[in-house]
Image (tube, rainbow, N blue to C red; front, side, top):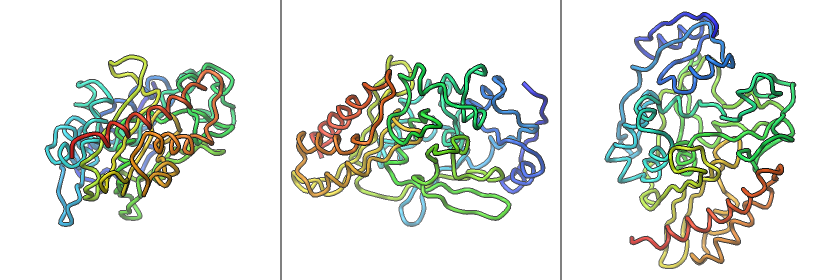
Length: 327
């Protein structure tokens, strides 16, 4: 680990000012950043502690919920408003990590966590995320956990977050602050696909800080769930996960939200499946057709070929469970 200085910010403006003066990184829970520093992947010359900033959950006049970037994951999952209005978000967080990590990890840090690809962490392997232009050993390597959607010839790593899958389904908005002022980023635009620049993972600028995530009031979110398929039940990363919400008009799908995890370099919003299902009967045949359409562009790389069929079955199973639940 390289040498670095440590400063604690008193407010958002102070944090931005401190980070702008050096090649610093913001530190909240540190559950991912510290690991990356130990491995020599991240080498900030300064850590700006923002763990005491933006730690409230507020209800806005329009009924939206604003969750501060410094709020701990455990506090979000335990909040009554989140559990009642956005059960998919509470469930995703509880599926994501142990209680100890949830007590440390922050909302902003969760959005910024980097892939758990083994080649990314292996300094002897070629990885375009770690060393742009070096190549991607995962493509021809052991890639069972890797992506099948949204990949490129430069990178097939998956995004690791569970919480972000739920936020993608909920059409959340990310609020950020920087030297140029505040701005809002649609959650679906926040994480980037790899293309030719897999090292550029988000729309966040280097001198910007996530201050909040806002979730609009939406009745569909009340009828939502999160399901996760993994190798073991104790806090493993997803092979495939799904965040889904459905609004019915008797037996017809009036509106629907679907997002997938474990299958792409970012939380994957399944808009093809959504479009295929709106106005259709809520049947398993319809769910299967929509899943087939969504996964049509999927590309396996050998060890992860099974994910294509698994993702289809996860979509069908989760939607069947959701529409069969009491309302």
